[in-house]
Image (cartoon, rainbow, N blue to C red):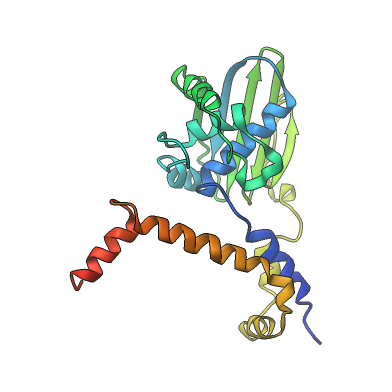
Length: 228
């Protein structure tokens, strides 16, 4: 029986989208920005709990457009400048004033990041407290997959029933290598034309990297020039 390749097309379209910077701090910013939409008023504190893998990968990662690094700054930017409608580009537009406010939040130690040791999958939990109330946002398995938004007053069990149905990695297991090859050879090009945008974006990033004196691209080119 013929495979339903529309599923693979949907997965590609969902997964291949532009992101402003590394997706680990972006996931944190998306979480805090979502929490901020639920409660107004001056921020008293924001506690952010993440799985060990996300913590390791995102703690010292740079954020495009600013010099500061790490998850605390990402969380602060989500609070003061986050636009959840932009998905993985949630902190794409940062004004100097918003940047200043984010730095003040971090300096005042109102943003705290903790490791949730018992998590083996992607996990982000924001517990935001303001003068007006509290909000809790929990993301699981995928960077933008928010599974609950509440006031944080009740315990939350992050068991598998909270994951989104039809996860892409489970669906993919139903396809063979031959299926993927057949899909690549038969999918209408107009259905995956957005891939060209991704190629152009990544080539532009690569070119920019070659112009940075201390960039990875420059270092690799030097190794090539040295015959290594």
